[in-house]
Length: 501
Image (cartoon, rainbow, N blue to C red; front, side, top):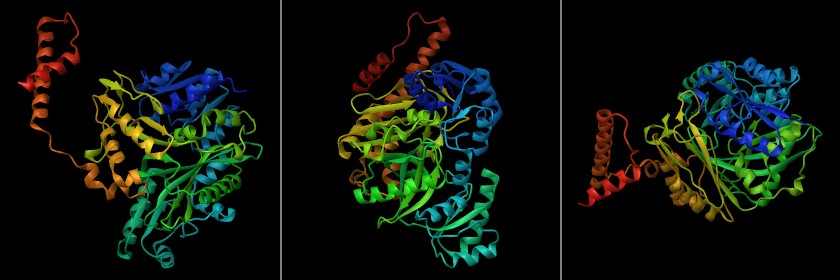
């Protein structure tokens, strides 16, 4: 049995993994950069090891530093979380070569699924439908022009090593094709060090639906049903739910069987996700496999009752799956909203800075996976996601209502966040009816980004509060240390009283 795990990550996922380890009686080791000295995962772990400067390229992405930290701390396993080195086949190989357990799949599985072109080929052989397109890399402009004749427009150009929307271009007309091809190659080279691209037919109204799988080293594979991930901005998910509003029992059974076949085809071990595109006629196509834990895994945990991190650890310890397919069923409905430190009205620009006040929602059916606290300064170096808010209900309507209530209660002062933007998504009738696809945000742009004019009274209040804060600071500068702390409640009440006059 694993006794001590180093978590090669930071933020909410590091805290999430540590929580499961504590319940299993497993010691934990955090790693941290200069910017993360005061981070919650450092405080929460049993031990912590400093691994370098703030940029991730000099700390969290340096394989040798992570492995050295694990050896120094005496950890017998490494959990990579998601992002950073979680899907790096070379890292998984290095960890195992050092005699340390890598909590994830074998390096060869990561390698095969990490290359989108080889993954498409493997899926085709396994009988899993793929989007019609090229069978291999596009090596020249002439070859590309010959290939697209059989695909038709619109089409997608995608980076073989891609992810997160990088190296991807949508092309509607042939006259734009070569320019888009060159741009996709350049971006792919800059992002992944590889300019290989392939071409697929563009699915015009797709749903992004993924299946969670668990596989042990004894050849057992199960799926834990689907997650609907179609609410995206810049090809990145921001709201997920399960079950999917468009899913039928027959389609779930069929897609689940294909997901299991996909995992078997690469001798997969651990937790993984098979992603599909589903069109308006419920035809589905393999998109990619994520060979790690997903950000949105808590909604699957909420409806199935399975702790996926604990299962990852048990599988890495060589145990057989604790569940059979017949044990898995969905209880109720769960929704996740990703809370970002960003400004949606300013093209989702990251908004790092000091959190001056935070109140997180609570109550029945509410879970918050986060890592920030009052007085914490969000660094500029990493992904701006600061928490995941998950709500559960017996029905989808109840889960949405609970999410709306929870977002109302979520209060963060000091930085811009996506909370209000997410509230507006919950209020749009098409979302409430479950009638949406991956174009949801662009279709509802005016409703989501509408900035109502502020009432004069609110502008007056803002000026009054700012002036009073200025006076308090001036008083402190004049008199030295204040004799009593200034209550924000008093300031608020004084402002309201002035507004009533």
